[in-house]
Amino acid sequence: MPRPTTPSTTIRAPAPKKLTRDELRECSAKGLCWHCDKPWSREHRCKKGRLLVIELVEDEDNEPSEEGLEPEEEATEEELQSVDYVVHALAGYSNP
Image 1 (cartoon, helix red, strand yellow):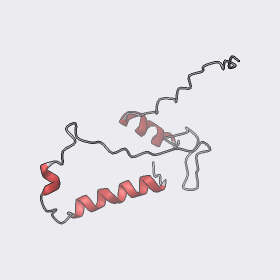
Image 2 (image 1 turned 60 degrees about the horizontal axis):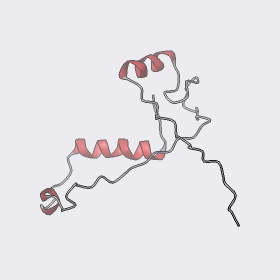
Image 3 (image 1 turned 30 degrees about the vertical axis):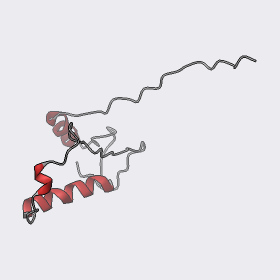
Image 4 (image 1 turned 45 degrees about the horizontal axis):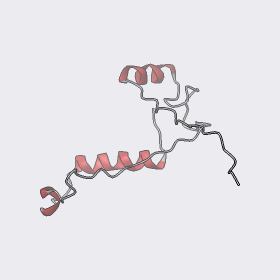
């Protein structure tokens, strides 16, 4: 008995919108959200959700790097501040 054929459709995800610094400045000057081009305020929430993904990048040779074998040093104040920015981005805080 032959199987029914299903039409093959390719679903392509839209390419992420990447704004240049000038475009970011222009949106900020106009008071617009960087992601949805609607007026921005502290209470603003984009209607369309965003998915943030962190992918692990492995070395090509899959061997541990020498950096990973050395004892880690204490993080500097500047490094700790950049970690705060990453955590805020993951939590969805936005401040254009």
